[in-house]
Image (cartoon, rainbow, N blue to C red; front, side, top):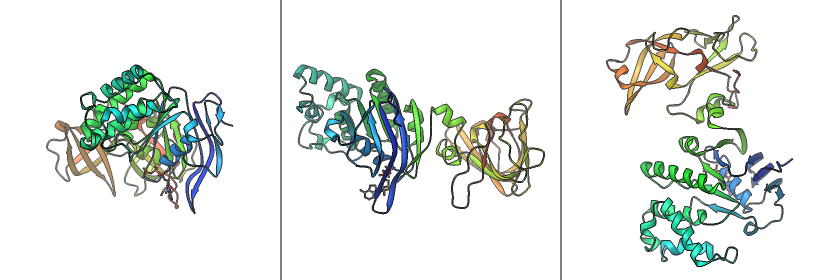
Length: 379
Ligand SMILES: Nc1ncnc2c1ncn2[C@@H]1O[C@H](COP(=O)(O)OP(=O)(O)OP(=O)(O)O)[C@@H](O)[C@H]1O
């Protein structure tokens, strides 16, 4: 059943292009006024989801409801959503102002000229293109054009904005600045926004909630905290955080510890502060997950109760003010990120002690033979 209170509600959406499944029973609810990021790798079905909401793509099965109303048979134009594509269509010979104002001249809005001017001015200022309004779009940089394209969506009075990777053509610095501005626009307008990205940093920065999509289905929906601390499976865990979460294969022992696959090290799973583990039969193949920033060098850094591991340095790599240290533990590698000063003097083969708090450990089922990601076992 669609959620009648949700601004956007999708149920059981199936879409195929020929024999290729793009959406495979997708369910999604975006609440009124929410900034919702749909995150997933290339080909996961993100653009198809947006097009389905906009009515540009007809699903073979499933329902789309907007504000509780079933959209079956409703034309895109009448759905009241504004969509911005990654590839943007602008009028190159017309000014940025004209490009921004033209949607407001459509019979749908017919805004009084003064109000249209005011809306265009406000959006242009937010997007940092206020000074470029007189210039023909053909003479703007790619980044500036992308902002005009985004502006064309944001000027419209819409029940929802559908944005497909709108920052993808911007350089890193501008992306960061625009993220903050987009967040501000969201907060001011309180217009429901469904935002597609494959960039987890962007999703974490912008979203009220995130939906992680894989192979045409939503794997997990949650706030950034829920998704970070309680990832549904190893796919979601790997999708967030750079360097990536360490996932080491092993088994569960009879006395409730994790034993690495090469039997080189053991990690207790029953410390008083460790998250409870669903009961797993001894011998079950599992993976232990530890994020690189949750590991420290030296035995005392994390206080009493921390778990200690002993290995040797494999390689170090400076990442600005921090250093990524890859440590060899028997046959496996574990990556940690430490302040640069802590890594000074580390050379390949230097013996090191690592510590981690029990509460930072995540336990997952093993990924299965077909590559299906293992689900989280820790509560
Ligand atoms: N018009 C089309 N014809 C054939 N196959 C398509 C078409 N549009 C999408 N697909 C396929 O459907 C699947 C989902 O595509 P979609 O564009 O929704 O993914 P995406 O998550 O947006 O990816 P990207 O980040 O690369 O844009 C892919 O396998 C894609 O190749």
